[in-house]
Each structure stands twice: as C-alpha cells, then as structure tokens.
Length: 346
Image (cartoon, rainbow, N blue to C red):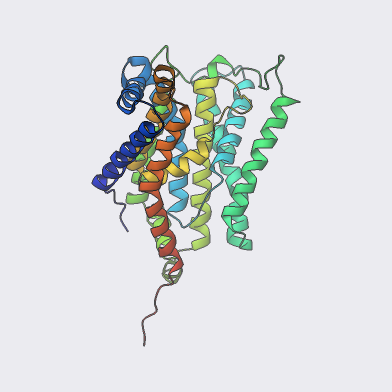
C-alpha cells in the first residue's frame, strides 16, 4: 500500500510524447528541432523564463495534490476546478476586507480563508456521496459549473470594480504574497506548494489518518471490517482535497493577479487531474509533472512567437503525454476498483 513512483517508465513516455510531437510538427510543415529548441528556451533559457515556468506550474501543483489526496481514499474529485475558484474568490474577499490587518498576518489569513472556502465547497459532495450515495463525479462536476457562474455573476455585478473588466477591487497590499523572482510573477505560493507536496507525502505515509485514507481507497470493505470508518475518512479526504485546491486558488489571486478576475483560470483544476495522473498519483511525481506542464505552457508561447507554430501544437504534446503516461494508470486503477475482492472459501 506504500506510494511508489516508477520514474523510468514516465521518462520514456514523456520522451516518446515529444518525439511524436516533433513528428506532428514535421508533418504540418514546421521545423521540429527549431520549434523544440524555442520551447525549451522559452521555458528555461532566461531568469524570466524560469520564473514564468514556475508561475505556470504553481496552481497546477496545488490542484494535482488536491486530486491525488481524494483519489487515495477512492474518491474521484472531478470538481477541483470549482473548489479552486471558490478558494480564489474567498481569498480575494478576505484580502479586500480587513484592510487594517498587518502583513504577514493578513496574507496568511487570506490564504487560509481560500482553503476554508474550498474545503466547505468540497464538503457538500462529500456528504452527498457518503450518506446519499450520489456519485461524486456527477456532483463535483456540476458544482464546478455552479462555482464558475456564481463567481462570474459576483464580479460582473455586485462586486465589480469600476471599469470594463469583470473583476473585483484589488486586495490590500498587506494581503499580497511577496514576489520571489521579480520582475516575474513568481510568488511565495510556489515554495508553499512544494512544501505542501512533501507534507501530503508525509501525511499519507507516516500518519494514522493517512494510512486509513489509503486503506479505505485500497479496500473499503476490508477497512470497515477492521474498524476503519469508510465514511469518516472519505469525508476527511474530500475536505482536505478541497482545502488544498482552495489554497491554490488563493495563492493565484494573492500572488499573481492581486484581485479576482473573471475567467482568470484557464482550467487549472482540470489540468491538475491530468498532472496527478501523469505523476503516477504520487506527491513527488506531481512536482515533476506540474513542472513539465508549466514548461509546455510557458515555452509554448515562446515557440509560437519565434517559429510561428500554433500554440495548439503545444497542447497536442500535452495530450500525448497524458495519453502515454496517464491513461494506462487510470485504466488500471479503474479496473482494480471494479474488481470485487474475492472472499476466501470456508
């Protein structure tokens, strides 16, 4: 039941995905080597490029950890995006309010308020799952759209700042997370996400609640027979998952945007699900997978600017990585959960 990370398999699949991506570039009439060089240079070639890559990787790392934690309890929390948005919105409201609080207290409380918002929003589908049997894939997905349109309504109407852009007032300076690599947007949220990855690993490997979560995910029937409450630990995993997603949303607002902007997330929650699977559902794997996706996002823009390659081709490489690495893992996990444990004959 220990968490395992099989690095060679992932590296081979990622390398194969890049080779297939180069083949797609060649077949569509673009220079594959020049495009690939521009992608790497745009991701790691300069100090600013590295900052941009890490900035892009930060929210994806948060959301991938959120999905991983719920998945380890046997829960498919597809609603990470909604919890991320609610956390971002809650953190923005806290950052706008309570302007008398000093730094860093204001920033810490605003970030935790984002986590609290995400946790509360995850509690609804958790209770529906364990007490009413509602499937979490359906409820969390629907609640993601509720979060999307609810936050959009507030920033377009009652909480809209003056101007044409649908956004709130800026948060107080005391609530902002400091930039750690100026002039890039890389903020303190990145080391927080890194620390959280190691904290999740320690929690799952070294604590009784973490072991119970993994036990429930591996075999709920056997866990119940051994006195481990499946309901209790699935709710705990769901709420912790929402908390991490909410902290990620808060970190994006307090560290990058400085206010809640309608449509600021290009789908960080959905990307986090893919990144978690690419990282083999391991916290350390999520770190490297989020850096890979951050590289593709940041480097893809440079590749488009320098070689005129459409940005969509960078997304094709992302899709190939997911297909070659994540799909077999997901299928394997689904089949394992569908198999009922065989009862020994008496």
